[in-house]
Amino acid sequence: SKCERMISLYDNLNALFEKAINEAYPDVVDPPVVISSSNNPKFGDYQCNSALPLCKLLSMEKTDAKKKVSPLDVAKNILSKVPSSPLIEKLDIAGAGFINIYLKREYGQNTLKNILKLGKVNPPPIYQPKTVLVDFSSPNVAKEMHVGHLRSTIIGESISRLLEFLGHKVLRINHIGDWGTQFGMLIAHLEDKFPNYSTESPPISDLQAFYKESKLRFDSDEEFKKRAYENVVKLQAHEPKIIHGWKLICDVSRKEFQNIYDRLDITLTERGESFYQDRMVAIVKELEEKGFLEEDEGRKIMWGNQKEGTIPLTIVKKDGGFTYDTSDMAAIKQRIFEEQAEWIIYVTDAGQATHFQIIVSCAERARIKLSHHRVDHVGFGVVLGEDKKKFKTRSGDTIKLSELLDEGLKRAEDKLREKERDKHLTEEEFRDAQRAIAYGCIKYADLCNNRAHEYVFSFDKMLQDKGNTAVYLLYARTRIRSIARTANVTQEQLKKAIEDTPISLEHEKEWKLAKVLLKFPDVIARVTKDLSLHTLCDFCYEIATTFTEFYDSCYCVEKNKTGEIVKVNMGRILLTEVTAMVLEQCFSILGLKPVEKM
Ligand code: ARG
Image 1: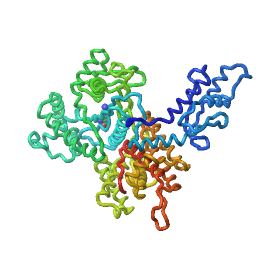
Image 2: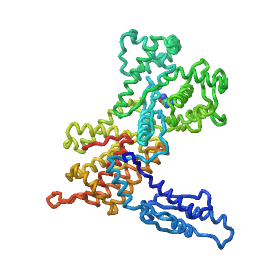
Image 3: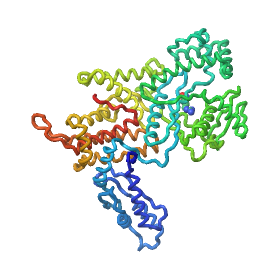
Image 4: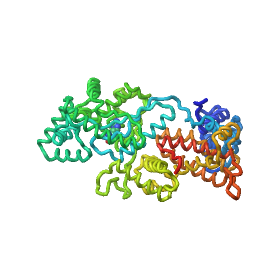
C-alpha cells in the first residue's frame, strides 16, 4: 500500500538474533543482543557479536571447569537457531565467535523496487505519532537577528521537516522576544523622532540603528530614561497610543524576519513573548498559591526539584515585573495544556541549556510536565569567523543576515561563472542554480557539523565542489538525474522497466550502492534519536561517493565509436533513479533544493 513504511535492517536483524539467542539459552534473562554493521566486507554486511558477552555470563554460572563453553560454541549454538529470513543470504562464523551476516540481494531488489513502485521514499515506522512543538528561530524585536538565530532557524526547520516526514504533528513556533522593558525606550525614541507616528507610519529603515540611538539616549539622558520607564508601565496597561507604537516597531522587525524566512523557505508561526501576558499573570498566581515561590531580597524565586548545583528561576522581579523565566513557565504550560504538546523541542545556543533544565525541573515540580511529556533542548555551538573569533563584520559589527545571504548569492554566481555554467544555462536556470547553491550551502554548512560544536563560517569552504558540501551534493544529484535523460529513456520505458526489469545488483559496486541506500531507515532512526542532522549529511555524502564508484565501473549505457547509444542497461538506470529518490528525500529534510540543470 502507499503507506507501507521502510523496514529498519538493524531492528530486523536484532529481532531475529534476539529470538535465536533466547531459544538457544532460555535460562539467561535479558541476554545481550549485539548487532553492528561491519566496516569490512570480508566480515559480511552486519555482525552479531553476542557470543563473547554471552559466554562470559554462562561461565560465571558454571563452576565446573569441564563444563565451560567457548565463545565459538556459543556462536555455533546461536547460529543454529537463527530462523531463515528473506533478509539473510548466509551466516558464517569468524575468529573467536563473531557471526557474519550477509544480506540477500533479492531483499535489496525488492525493497528498492518498492520505492520505485510507490514513487516515494517512505519513512520507517514510528511507535506513535505525537504532537511536537518545535520552538526555533525566536529572534528579538529591534535587536539584531544574528547568526545564532540563523543556526536555530536552520536546525529547527530541519528537525521539523524530519518529524513531519516521520508522521508527527509538528507545531513550528517562533518565540519572538517582543515584550519587555526595552520597548519603553524604543517608544520614547519613536515619540521624539516621529511625533506623528499615530497617524503616519514612520519610515524606520534600520531598526538596529534605531535601537542603538535609543539605547545611547537611555544611558545618558535622565529625563529620557524616566519617560522610557513610564512607557513600560503604560505598555503594560495597554494604553492605546503606546500599544500602537509597540505594534509599529514589531511590524518593522517582522518584515525583516519574514524576508529571511522567505528566502530560506522556512515556515514558522509567530507567537512571541507578548502572547503570554495574561498567562504570565495566571501562572504566577498558580505557583504562588501552590506555595512554590520563595522570597529572595524582594524577588520571588522558584527552585526546581533539587537545589544543589543549580540556580532558581526569577518569577517576579523586585519591581513586580516578569522575566524571561516567567514567560517560559507560562509558555510550557500553554504548550502542554492548550496545544496538547507531548514533545517540546527548544532550539537555542548551548548557553541556554541550564535555563531550560531549570524550566523543565520547575514544570515537573509544579506537575505541569508529567513523565509522559518529552522535552529536549537542542543546543548548538557559536558561529565563528574565519579568524576563529566570534563572527563579526570587519568593523566589528554584528553581521546582518540579509547581507550575509546577499553575499552568498554573489559568491554562488561567481562560482557558476567560474565553471562557465552561464554559457550552458538559460537566465532562469542560472538564477535557480544560484539560489539553490547559495542558500543550500549556508544551510548545509551548518547542518553537516555536529551541532554541539562551534563552527567556522567560511564561504570559501562551503562553496568547494569537492568534499562533503552542498555544492558537491547538488551536482551529484543533478548528474544522477541526467543519466536516464541523456540515455533518452522515456517515462513510459521507465514505467515499464519498473514493472518488468529487476534492479541490477550483480556487480559488486551495484550491490555496494544498494546496501548504502538500504541503510536509510536506520539513518533516519539515528538522526531522530540524537536530533543531530550531521548524520544525515554524512549519509548523503556516502550515497554520492558510493554512486560515483558505481558509475565509474558500471556502464549504464553503451556507446559505439561514433558516440551513438547502442544499448541501455535498464536494470542500472533503475538503480540510478532510486538513488536519486533517496538522495532527494534527504535533501528535502535538510532543506536543499534540487536543481534541474547546473
Ligand atoms: N529570544 C531568545 C534569544 O534570542 C530565544 C527564545 C527561545 N525560546 C524560548 N522559549 N525561550 O535568545
